[in-house]
Length: 141
Image 1 (cartoon, rainbow, N blue to C red):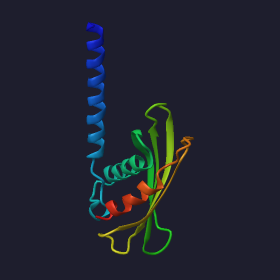
Image 2: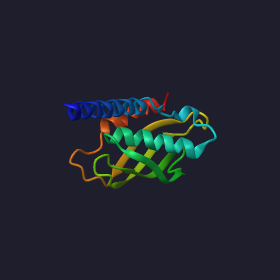
Image 3: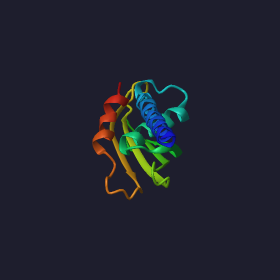
């Protein structure tokens, strides 16, 4: 009987930990391109993490490997990011390529037009394009 109570207590504690961790992740703020500021590397890390969380169910330890801004044509800027994250269950490393297409007509008031995402995760459930595209509205606040 004592063992059953201990197992129940541990299971309850683990469940609460997972629940609270999930709320902490959900509460993380999505950065806005309207107020990107001077802390460029920190801003890009937040953008990449937000996109990874939208693309995949529970990416672990998302980290930017490299990033650069390109200007493919006038009034357009592309933020090209290469990042890594680890799977929750498999703990395998995956690499993602992200391109954020931005209208940079006004240098102080950028607007995200589109987000392109791909990764090497072989999961039969691909990245959530719907959630990634929903981030555009959040990025433009």
